[in-house]
Each structure stands twice: as structure tokens, then as C-alpha cells.
Image (tube, rainbow, N blue to C red; front, side, top):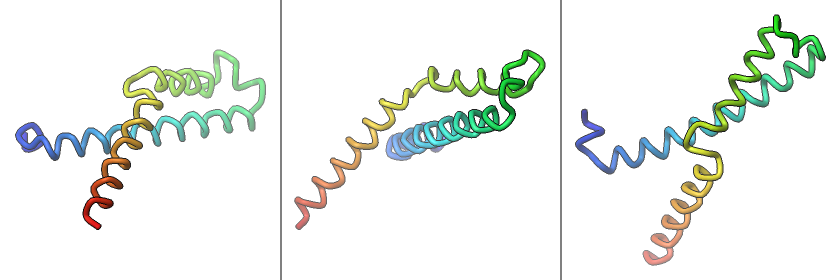
Length: 89
């Protein structure tokens, strides 16, 4: 409820959630890919839990926000911060 009533917190949490989604999903993809490399071809079998995990983590790429959007938002935010600091000097 406090988030909905305070736009500043809502905007900050939105950015934090985007960063968390980016980091978690990309790390999950890397981890499952490495696990599949260790196991080898057997990991592609329909009976392998790894093939299901692999498909699941790949789907994270298609849920918003997309990685490029998160990176663009972060870059924009950093540029705003840099400009504000430059004007304070």
C-alpha cells in the first residue's frame, strides 16, 4: 500500500525489480546451461529434469522487461545522475 501511495518508492522498486529479474534470469540460464554441459547429451532426454529447467529458464528472456530495456533504463538513470552531479559542481 505504501508503494502505491509514494511514486518515488514505486519508481525505485520498479528499477530494483528489473535489475533483479535481469540478474536472476541470466544467472539461471548460465547455471542450467553449464549443468547441461556437464551432463552431456543425456540432459536433452525428455526424462531429464535439466531439459525442462533449460526450457523454463529460456522463457524468462521473453517476459518483460527485456534485457535491452533494463540496460537502457539503467543507462538513462546513470546519465541523469551524472548530469545532476555535474550541475552541482
